Amino acid sequence: MRFLGVAAVVLVASGARAAPLQRFFVMGDGTLAIVNAHTGERAEVRYRKADGTYDQAAIARIRHAFRSEGDSSEGKASLRLIEVLSWVQKTSRVRPLTLMSGYRSPDYNEGLRAKGMRAAGGSLHTEGLAADVAFPRAVLRPLWMKVRALDCCGAGYYAKEGFLHIDVGQPRFWEPSTSRVEENLSAGNARLFGRTEFDRYAKGEEIVVALHAMTVAPVRVGREAWFVMAGREPARVVLDVAGTPGEGCVELGVSGATVRLRGVEEVGRGAFRLTTCEPRPGRTPAAVETNVTEVR
Image (tube, rainbow, N blue to C red; front, side):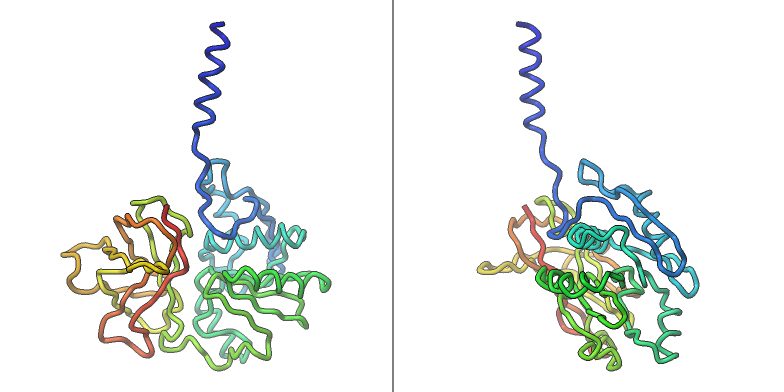
């Protein structure tokens, strides 16, 4: 009887253990296998642990395989992008994924533009938010349609070249004839956008927001933000910065720079809205919204 009692206690304790928080709305199976088409570098890793946290050594291996083709510079590879690529890998059943272009250093990207190549100014490749991935012809278009249906990402279909461009910027889709890359649409901060580090947060957890596609620096943001949820009054959120909350502005000097939001007590699903301050360079918008985020 004593042993039965101990077993019962163990089972109850095990049943009470909380499931890991699923950090993103679009997630793969926690593994990624990629090969860089230009360097031959391979990475086959389990980047997400059983407890839902991320293995930084595995992320570093992915980042190394993502490095810039032209000058071998190593940059970021966002967790959001890694999860989307893992989802793509699982959905397409293509393993490993063949990476045509991952991270690009800003200098290399500008060099491509100077040569007349189809490289966007303010390309999300330069921030570790984009990847060009080759697929068999039979897979290419159906997979593009599936990525489009997620409504989470940028999805470019390059049938002739045999690859998809996938990024974790604002949801949109295109083909070469509709890409408008030659118009430099990001010039003057016209496409400035925010991204939270994760999609899901626990109530009261600190939330990190990065501003991306900043082509003219600096950008100054107000010390107050708003959590905007459908059908509800926006909830005020304070930026966690030095100084008096609510007074003055915070200067962000480079694309990808972050601010931290503290004390988000409202539970719900919505986007965070940050306001920018005068003087606004170029076509900087008066307000910048993030992706949809869930606080629970």
